[in-house]
Image 1 (cartoon, rainbow, N blue to C red):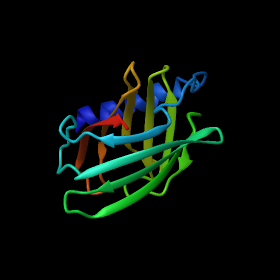
Image 2 (tube, helix red, strand yellow):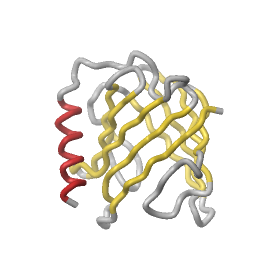
Image 3 (tube, one colour):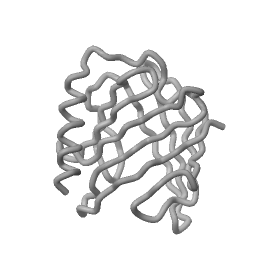
Image 4 (cartoon, one colour):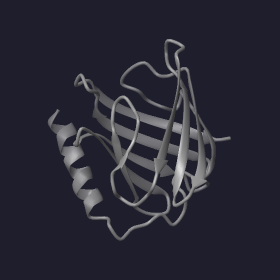
Length: 156
């Protein structure tokens, strides 16, 4: 738990130090991405499938996530990434606000909060060839269960 807390605190400090960095390219790039379950790692049951459609929207990116969990339940979520480093409201069960900021042309940091408390930090990285998008997530669920996942998505 101390390691998780240190990671979350470091991410908050790191993100607050990035006000001058802006998206030079879309992270992730616009397109359709499919989760490669065999290359991904989960500390709980993996989903059966996941597709993410990324579209440019205004000054940000709209991510439409279609997920089928391990029990076969389907869920759809829409998240807007603004890339401005500011927290924006999000409708999701595990978090209610998200801030995202590019570190460079291939990497972005994302911080998610619930009721003002940091609950997840993510590192979003796109491969040099633009065909693989890896998202590393650390955090906790509302009941205190740790989240340590690495999602590897491939461009379709």
